[in-house]
Length: 409
Image 1 (cartoon, rainbow, N blue to C red):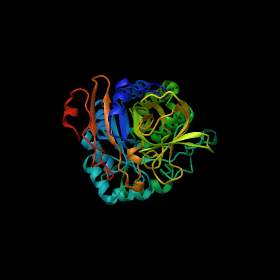
Image 2 (cartoon, one colour):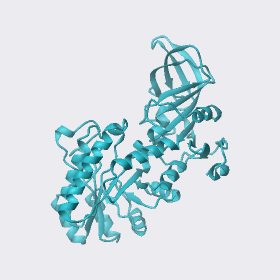
Image 3 (cartoon, one colour):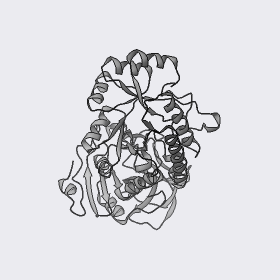
Image 4 (tube, rainbow, N blue to C red):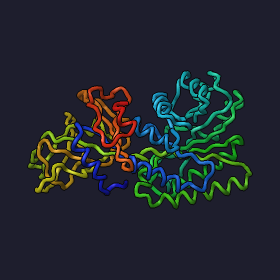
């Protein structure tokens, strides 16, 4: 479901029934995003679409992605545990740094991580994690491609693949590079990802054992309107196909989107606690029972529905219920002006919300629900993590799927 579309009627309905705050996930929208991503790279074989677990750790969301054959991309052993519980059959790993214990665990699970630094390479060798390694590389993107959020030489992540010290360490520990990984941040124009692919293919020639290339994520800023994705996918597919034909060997291509798959599929249901006209701002300020500062530091939601419907319309600002001056969910939007006790349903909270949360005032995380429009079934999940909500009520169910009968997972 794209931004600007209307949520399913059942989603609106349930948004009025649940104790707030609550995050609601539309499984139909997630499936559609997965299918679109797969179509864009359908000419590449083998190809893995891997969900970046850092974007969302909700158990129901992860189980859905696992069940439809998406792989998992993890950056911590907490995320690895979430991926294992969700049943992912294919897991890729990279992080700024793994402990020796983490590296041994990955090795025991036959996961070859993409290491981020030379000292990580040495740690991998010292802990007896085998000769095969992956490298996360820092690519010197030209000035014409640098945009806010897309990094080049200045990135703190990744190794210089042409560094003589790297070559010396590979020889010293008798390691072979089987995987190359690049993630330079958020994509902002259609030239950035094809350039990354060309650079990684050059490096695959440099390391003769490479059989896997990971293009990272950062899709959401560029591909959220979906239009450039097919064109970029065709260009990348052509470059990979030509490389394979010339070298006579295969490459496993991997992409790791996070927000692209789930961001627009998430909705936040909140209750209005206070509604007051602000003379200087010339708008009604609505204080709700959630918090942008705590829950949505990387999201900019928009109000989709007010319940019950109100006749009077006007400019509104939706703010969180913390003592942080900049705790603003929606800065300025024309709405049916709600009253205290009314519900708001906001879109665009499916990624980097619960997984990225803070705990100012000790507020717990919202309970999370999943809606499958195809079966008209709801199921509920308590969030897995340190801030997991322990006092959440049982989920409201529509339909009778096996999962929904079980209540809290």
